[in-house]
Each structure stands twice: as structure tokens, then as C-alpha cells.
Amino acid sequence: MKRLFWLGAGLAIGALVFRALSRRAASYTPRGLAAAARDSGRHLLDAVRDFADDVRDGMHERERELHAALLARSGADPGAGSGPGAGDGTGTHGDRSWTGAEDPTR
Image 1 (tube, rainbow, N blue to C red):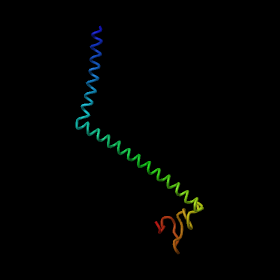
Image 2: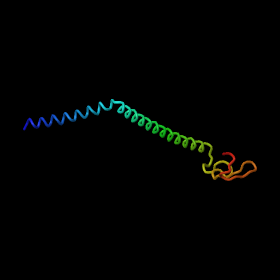
Image 3: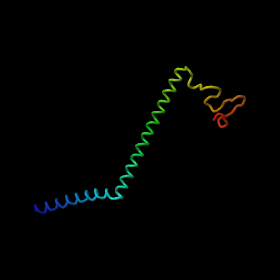
Image 4: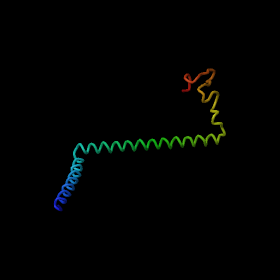
């Protein structure tokens, strides 16, 4: 009975080792190397996108801080804008009036 137990244990361990070595060997084939390169490239691209998103978020936050500091320094009302119709899509330019889509300055 002891011999049968050790035979079974040896077969199980041998099968596990064989599978692990087969997987490792498959990773060094051209197909395995291509898959690893593809996965690495995908992870690198994701990391670059995340970095760009973080930089963009920081940039927007800093712009808001600078805008708030500029408004506080100038004492201007942030809702007033500058000039007639500022912020509502209407206004004047010289002797001509316009509405949003016709804005000559855009």
C-alpha cells in the first residue's frame, strides 16, 4: 500500500513539473515571444495613457488655481466676463452685433 501511495505521489509531482516546464518552453517559442511582446506593449501603452491623463488633470487643476489667483488679484467678478454679452454667446464687434454661431472672433 505504501508503494502505491508513493507511486501516485511521484506521478502527480512528475505531471506538475512536466506541465510547468512545457509552459516555460512554450514561452520561448516565436509565438510565445510575440504574445509576451504584445502584452508588454499593451501594458506600456496603458501606462502612458494613464500618465497623460494624470498630467492633463494636473494641468487643468493648475489652470483653475491660476485663474482664481488672477481674478482675486484683479478684483474682477468671475461671472461678469469682459464686455457686453460675455459668456452668453452674444455681443458686438465694432458696429455689428451677432449671436453665438456668427461670432466673427472665432
